[in-house]
Image 1 (cartoon, rainbow, N blue to C red):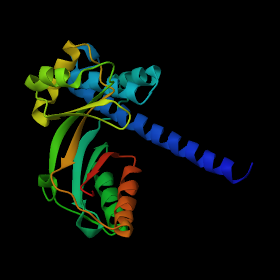
Image 2 (tube, rainbow, N blue to C red):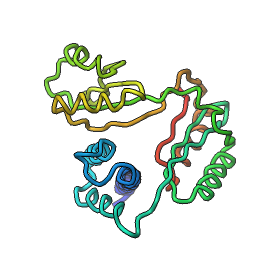
Image 3 (cartoon, rainbow, N blue to C red):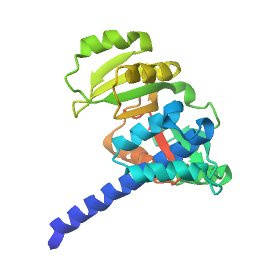
Image 4 (cartoon, one colour):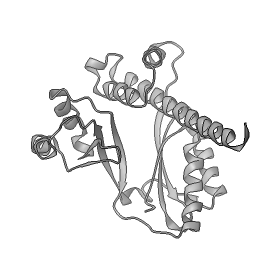
Length: 236
């Protein structure tokens, strides 16, 4: 079958790995949402957001339902959300969001990842001030008029509207307005492809290719950790 088959196989396995990681991340988010607001998506906005995000990554409906049932069961795992801050090589700021049932294990692993790739784990607040926590909603562009939609959503906290490389509409809103935007979209029967809280850097660091590769090696290593949900950085 030769080299082309091996390349295709490697690409396929990489895609499966990413999908498995996404399913695990959303499964933990579901567990946390159910613990905080109950198992009914109609009465739990956080869980409703998780279900929408699950659809966005093609997570099977039965896996979503199983995750909700697990979160209600006797053998449920209690996850704690913990954020770690630090620096990658060349002064790049990094924030690591985790969901863990064992913070002692998680902090040890996160510190190890930083150390092995030439970075350093910092204290709480050491780089957080460099990021703005922002709500990011992605919706399908199904005949939407961006100017009209912008006017309709300004009162719900819309700060910025645009399109991604796939032609989807992307909405940015302050962290404090995340719930208002979710409600405004629901009232218009607009189901987001994804709705996430992201940490957007206020300033960025530009590096040469070799230096950037060192930083991205650390980012990739962190993202592969089972306890890590999302990693944000200010590398341009």
